[in-house]
Image (cartoon, helix red, strand yellow):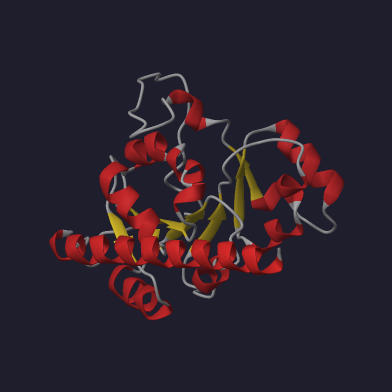
Length: 217
């Protein structure tokens, strides 16, 4: 039985490697034709280090990002080849591929964004957060009573955009020495103004809010 189990594991690993190589090859063919944002044009960057399995976390922000892009230069930074391929087909704003730290350094040098938004708590967020001349803002990808919504990692960000009083109360109960008044901004759920899934085209509802373009400004 152990031999059979090892053989199955080996087959899965080989299949995974072949899929990964195929994705990297496809991306390598497409990247030369992908235009890069003009230097200094990106004011708001959305950092996404996850792969395709967590695309739902960024998809729900497509509509608000498209709206924000009408007022500010916006781009998504992708660290995963699989996610990058998907974003190239779906994203309503420009996407920049930065698989390695040196690619992040080049992006920061070229663009000097004022604000970086984070939709999750990926450990590689800290590779972007080491840059100090910008605001780092956690926007999350949902609201619930899970521990994820009150993790002490909130303290790592300059600001957190939250839905409202329920989120504020959860953070107040869970975190020590966290200045809610200074470091959280209630914005409601701008994702609710847009269809979620696919390209998440915006729906016009003027009475609702979107992500504020002047966070920290």
